[in-house]
Length: 83
Image (cartoon, rainbow, N blue to C red):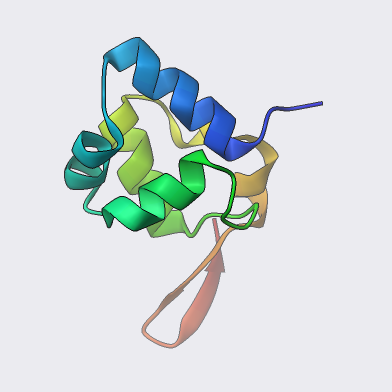
């Protein structure tokens, strides 16, 4: 079984010595969102944009977020694209 996204993010934050506040700032996300994510209080899926932002801030590929990324969807100019 694959660890929840929040657990994986927390481990990577620890490896990089990042606080939730620093991760939020680097990823362009709210501190409350990052807190909920790390504490596994968010859904199991991430938007493509959020996954890309987190991946950049954590210095990992988007695939770091596992199978959830294959179900991501984003809307651009009224069209839906699978991520």
